[in-house]
Length: 342
Image (cartoon, rainbow, N blue to C red; front, top):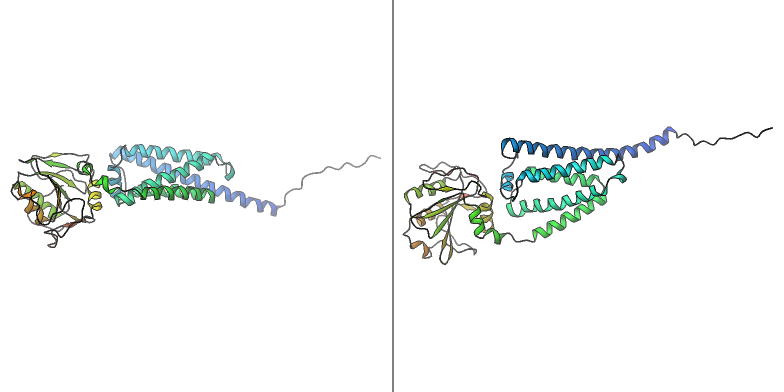
């Protein structure tokens, strides 16, 4: 009589056991799917920015900070956009290759995301500490990078945070006031120059297109062709109501605003005059109009209400009379007989 043959089979998982494993797998899938979705959305956002900039010849942004940041890049903003698009596409396809398993995420993706936080630490620190203004578009890209690091787990977030904080602290330890206060800040921020009968002393007028006191100062220059004046607006202008001027369309208004901030000046108009013995600063409509109306050599004699760079500034004539505008806000009160720098 033959012995009965027994066939051993693996037990069929019960529905309870299947339901126990599936939520864990689904949870992993959902996290990676969300990360893939964010990388794809970021890619589409940057692609849209590239197309809009190419078509409109200017980037799309909801704040003035974007224009400020754009003026201070050594390369075209489109280069940054193309690099960002390539970055998020690499992240998207790298996450997709993991097929829902966190352990299969390529190591290069984690490294790229940590490096991106180091880059963002420089960009965000520059906007916060130097420009004192933020680009909404840049902050949106930064938010995508932070979220992607968070979704890859606690170790990824810890490594990214260490890199971000380290780079941010190193950047915060740099002193940007000295190079900003140099000659380069004056030349890069000059929108227009009106040569006068005298090439020296040189005057640099810091103003805003919406400030009525600034417009009065510019109007006064129509009757004074003796002084050589360089015009340094703190906002974007396209023209100025004066004859015999040469313009520079690629000037950087942000450098003018940063220079005033570094010197502790929060009011315009400001006239900085280069004398044989240094620099002289005057603030306010009355003080500047009076200075530009002086005889040729009187301006170098050390007028009351002036100071040399970069020391502290005393009380300056015209300041108490409230004949200036705040650098951080527009001054749009109506002033009759004002000429405009648009």
